[in-house]
Image (cartoon, rainbow, N blue to C red; front, side):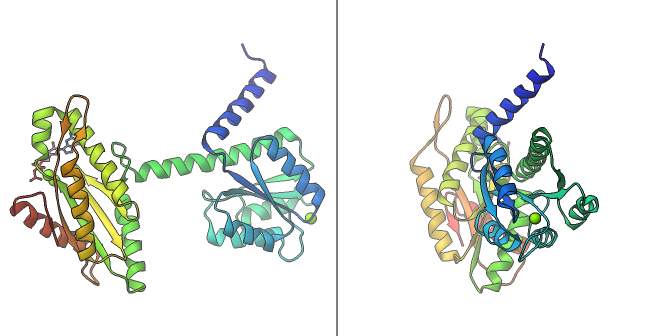
Length: 314
Ligand code: GH3
Ligand code: MG
Ligand code: MG
Ligand code: MG
């Protein structure tokens, strides 16, 4: 049995715990020209363990946000010198989505139409001054939780649950962007397709569960060695890598090093240490689509398999 007050403080405690565990770095930016309002709101936020930054007007706020990616919530007043609250919201919405940066507008009791304007200009929510502390916490927590949930869903949609690597969908989304950027900057881009050799035999000899552990071990090695690049599990025992700024000669050498690392060090599974090899095809052809580059890399992969596996072809 929990009383109403008890339930409230339990939820408060729970949200504090979650915040300490997950998001120690979360920062709220308080924007208002009144030092009294800034310090009142800041102290409420600090009681909830948020990091707080303050700005006196919109211009200062824009500069702070540009330099601090930990700012996830902006609480802003309206009338300020340099850049007012509504214009600040407009500027921010051109750069950040609702689920990347949360904005709460502050309006006074007299300015009822201002709350609607804040929402129209792109704020997630608003607060009327004066507000009671409970309402303040509810609004802040509610908005923070909803952007965290969306962020989590977004992450889950991009990640392969078994290996923790990006999935195929994300590879194509991000890969196209990276390819375009690199071509604009006249930088080479290498694309590789990696496929585990005779993986069916691993499953046949040691069981599917050991097979999964081998894929996880391989993913760890690849992730470590290719941390600067876009790496994804394409499906099954196949992986894609996109390497901006690296021509296929250098990509070939890098992948061959990783191939050697894996060949020399068996992956530990529950009952066995299992040595796995992989083959890869690499290309850095200019001015073709990501799909075409993957096709070319796949042809080289086929050659690598044909020539006896455990090798890279570029
Ligand atoms: P090759 O050297 O020609 O690539 O031979 P291979 O045995 O690796 O290729 P094949 O395509 O014949 O077999 C791939 C195997 O990978 C078959 C499939 O059961 C297994 N596999 C795919 N995804 C998973 C997975 O998530 N876990 C496990 N344990 N096995 C998987
Ligand atoms: Mg003001
Ligand atoms: Mg294979
Ligand atoms: Mg395969």
